[in-house]
Length: 49
Image 1 (spheres, rainbow, N blue to C red):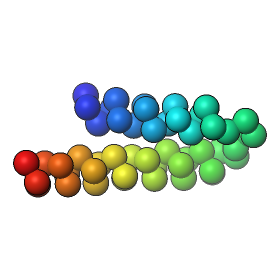
Image 2 (spheres, one colour):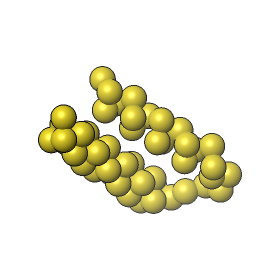
Image 3 (tube, rainbow, N blue to C red):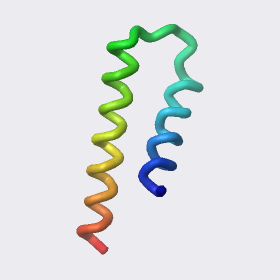
Image 4 (cartoon, rainbow, N blue to C red):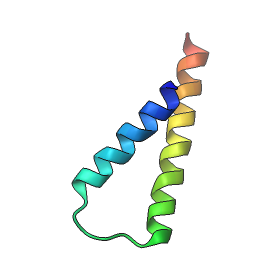
């Protein structure tokens, strides 16, 4: 659940910042970049704990 909340917060930040329309490819790139960043951050935290 924590990963989903982190992803939603990152996605909502980008939505609030962008007033221009993104293409589907750009939206997918952004989404998967955030997924990977969130997963990497999660596992970094798990390894250090």
